[in-house]
Structure formats: C-alpha cells, structure tokens
Image (cartoon, rainbow, N blue to C red):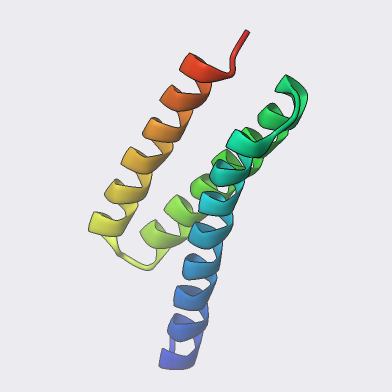
Length: 83
C-alpha cells in the first residue's frame, strides 16, 4: 500500500468513527424503540467497519479501542433501549 492509499484509508477510518459516534448520539434522540434500534444498527455497522479497517491498517491499539467502544454501545443499547 502506498502512502496515498494509506492516507485515504486513514481518512475513511476517521469518517467511519465519526458516523458511528453520530449514530450513537442519535440513538438518544430517537422518538421510538424502532428508531433507536436503527441508530444502534448504524453505529454497530460503522464500528464493525472501522474495526476491520483499523486491523487492515495494522492499528492494533485503535482496533482494540474501537472494540471496547462498540462493547460499550451494545451494553448501553441493551440496558436502555432493548425490550
């Protein structure tokens, strides 16, 4: 992978992280359980993609941190929104 490709992938990683956090924030503003579930799935999918990309880039500490953040998001959803 050349430097330009690496920089592009790092930008994609930052974008995925931002989208995941926005979806997590939106989960709290949801007006129904269904909307909260949609936001949760969006956050989960973005975190999953970011974890995979971090792994592909060899960013093991970032991958671990993202995995921990995803675990937190899952725990919050299950405790506050799951029926």
